[in-house]
Length: 259
Ligand code: PEP
Image (cartoon, rainbow, N blue to C red):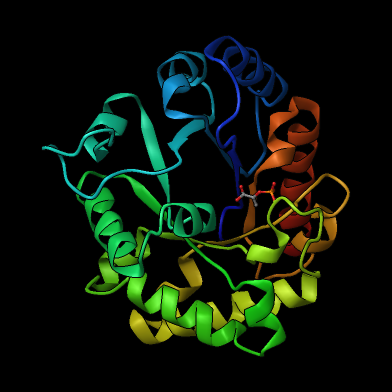
């Protein structure tokens, strides 16, 4: 059984003081997140402060992006070893907001995936179609292109160290979530591609989380789908009680699947 993973993506929100309050509330509310891995991704400026708060607790730390290179003349960028030094174990890569706003290409995302793995970080490769692509019946074409390009050159051993996030762009921050059936259909498709790129056995071990307006009141239905291994939560992760409820429900949902 794949351990469910719930990631809080705080995006560009919060002062360091606010991040401390939020991280402390999540840590204290989730002293023993049963059978679920929980990772907080604060803004870069709050990583050190949140690291102090979650170190020694079951809550993990992640970043929202990184550069592909370990150091160098890349003004304004953050390298994978810098994240490792702060205690990060995971990094989001290819988030649709970065693809859209920063023009990140599949090739850049692939270089970042390789760079993150080289330093022991778990890359969370985000893929997802726009509303227009879904309307045109291009959902599978889009996510397949992003997955193949994002994992290009990785051998089976490297693929086992990745996490995928299916995030339909039309569902991010919009309050519109994919139905559990729509999400599960894409997750199943992605898992099929992983079987081809690595092996059937490896594909069964890679976690594929869903992101797009996940909240405490829709996570149960999403987690009832055996293909959904957790959630990448944006807006709702900024509220500690709401995020804690999502984690508890995700854990219960995954546990009841194993019964
Ligand atoms: C996200 O940050 O990846 C996300 C899915 O955001 P939201 O939950 O706000 O839709």
